[in-house]
Amino acid sequence: MNNALKIVLGAGFAVAVAFYANSIVGQATHGGFLVLAAIFGAYMAMNIGANDVANNVGPAVGSGALTIGGAIIIASIFEAGGALIAGGDVVGTIKKGIIDPAAFGGDPMTFVYAMSAALLAAALWLNLATWLKAPVSTTHSIVGGVLGGGIAAGGFAIVSWGTMGKIAASWVISPVLGGVIAAAFLYIIKSQILYKEDKLSAAKKIVPILVSIMAAAFLTYLTLKGLKHIWKDLTAVLSFLPQTKKPTIGIALIFGVIGALVTYVIVKPKIAQRVATMTESREAINMLFTIPLVFAAAMLSFAHGANDVANAVGPLAAVNDALTNLAVSKKAAIPLWVMVTGGIGISIGLALFGPRLIKTVGSEITELDQMRAFSIMMAAAITVVIASQLGLPVSSTHIAVGAVFGVGFLREWMDSKKVDAKQEKLRIEVEKQRALKADLDACTNEDPAKKLELIEAHKRQKKKVKSLKRSLRENYVKRGMVKKIVAAWVITVPAAAILSAIIFFVIKGFAV
Image (tube, rainbow, N blue to C red):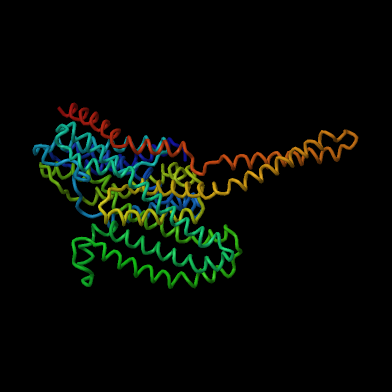
């Protein structure tokens, strides 16, 4: 599918949302702004799908566990399912509490201008980041948009700078935590399976434990992040559940432990059966992690859809609430059409424009196989759970990409310890190349068959030496990609804020 057709299809979705918004506006005062916000919301949702969702499925695709087509189908279904089933019916009008709604002085239209500007600015920044192949935080994008629109509307005094400081801290905390946890799991796999003499016996023992830990991590993560919006409804139907406002860490851990035990009982005999027919190769052991990776991609997508759809629909719901009630509220109800816009928009954006970032996360930062991707997916779930309980500000995008960095740097560090052996091997192969060159120079044209044989042998040896030299200077993590991605992270909030402030004044100017 060419880019022009993708743009047409994306625009078609935004137009469809606009028509629906227009049909429900009726004679409402300033109803045209709801239509405008609906277009911006649809555009934002598609950009979330194009950029953010790559973190959920990129490692699985890069490792070969899923094709891009399969990943898009799974992620689209579970992203939309998470948004529509567990996305909630109420959302905070100001993401992360960075601006007090009271600071708008009760003027709903100024609030509408600011939220509309925030949506468009965040979407434009995500669009640019996707084009540059830089995975960035959609949460930080919308935070920057709200920040810029809020400052333009009410000045710097209305910003909660303490909250902004915590968000800035996540630029370091998220990737470091994700990288350390992913590297730790990969080290366990290497030391406890790959470096053992009897790899198959080690895999038979360790892999069921690792898969069970993954099940515990994801069920805990899914309970905390994916079910929090519908917990009251669940407890009303299932009276045996604790009657709390939202699932606590204790409840989530109990679900996780139960899931881990069930998973271990199911997986252990299947792994034993599989190992009995396997060879002791790295490729064979890698295949043991394929199915867990598919489940991980699905669960991450569901939790992301439930948790992050607010980035697309929050400001749109806020605009709808402000125009309906002609007041600025801290909480806004999410109409079904708004949630559908977010859920379906994310899936459309992923299908049309997601492959670009999926390839970046999956294969253009470091080379991934199934066990490396498994470590990354584990880190994504565990880091969010740990950070949320410690009150640390984290970004799921930064965690996932940081985990990819961590895996790559661990590989580089472990292989650097073998450098002396590699250098000795290179010295031997260079000597062989010189010997072949000497034989070739000494060979006369009187024996053309022998000379041809020496020429071919010298070519092969030259390629071998070149390959060894390349491996000695190879970086397992592409430094250029790291620099570009980190730079994009740092400028996301200010870039979205500046764009939003400009758009605010444009919208306000047209409105007046």
